[in-house]
Length: 158
Image (tube, rainbow, N blue to C red; front, side, top):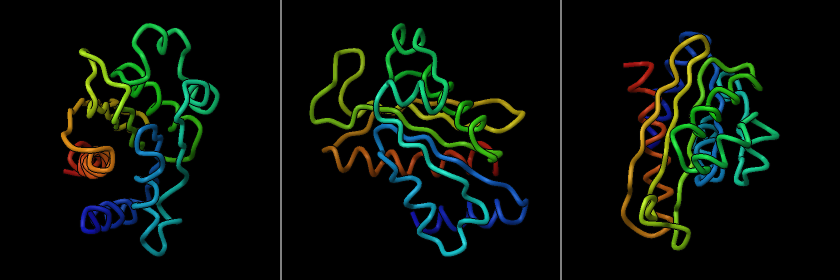
C-alpha cells in the first residue's frame, strides 16, 4: 500500500492538487494511510469519518431521503458523500467508502463484505464502484482501503 500512497502523493504534489477522504466502514484508515507520508499536509486536506447516517447528513450533506430510500451502503449515498466532501473542503479529489465489514449487519441484498466506493473530482464526474470482499472484518476493511487508493489513481491519474 505504501507504493500506491507514494504514487498518489507524487502526482498530487506535481499538479499542486489536494485530496479529501470521507469514510464510513474504513473508519479513517484511508486518511491514516495518506498521512503516513511526511509532508502529506501539502496535498491532504482532511478526512471525514461519517460512520452514522446523521454524520453523513450533517458533515457531508447527504440527503435523508437518499439514505432512507437506498441505505447507507449504496451507490447513491457514496456519490453524495464524494460530492459533499469536495464541497466541504478545499480539495480537488475525494475518495469515499461505505460498506458492511461484518461480522454482522449483512443481508441477502447486501452481504457482509459489500463496500461501495466513490471517487470525486471537482468539476468532473464522480465515479462509483461496488465490491464484495471475503474475509473477516479486518480483512474486508484492509481490502477496501487498498481498493479505494488504487481506484483514485486509476480513475483520475492513469
